[in-house]
Image 1 (cartoon, helix red, strand yellow):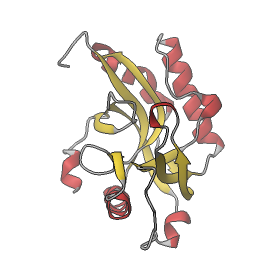
Image 2 (tube, rainbow, N blue to C red):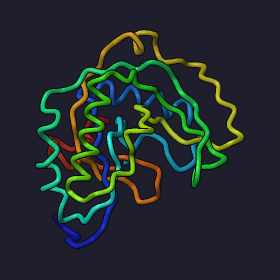
Image 3 (cartoon, one colour):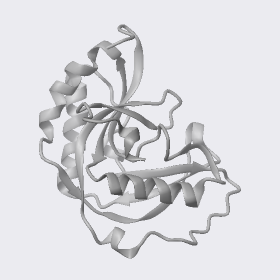
Length: 197
């Protein structure tokens, strides 16, 4: 891996198996939030994902870290979305709002998130996403405080009735504290992710 010896931001996350779901979520986010977005909007270089744990580590350790966590969830995990959330930002995001889909927090998901956090701790890496405050979600974007959101074209009802398959992944994240999933590193994609658009 290039840049050996350099600290960088990463995200162990659940990545949708369905290219169609990835495209639909991205398109809906862009259609609904594009004029209001501030610093984060699904689209080019911002992939839909469900964060399990964000962290900062030396780039040279990423492959061995993936080896250490990849066996924690070998099979895809089936998840459902429960509702659209709009939450006020805190700390560096104060004054902004986050918008996206809340994920129904089943026991398997919560257990996986804790196991990932514990594994990082055993590797002497402090995860940013703590089990005590974990809120499973898929972010569409961050919006300005004056945004008047009106979801004229709501997602179809069956979006909230279906189960979707997600696989464990490790991706490169942004350094600005937004949690943007910029690039999937592991498992190595069989094709460029950009070809789904």
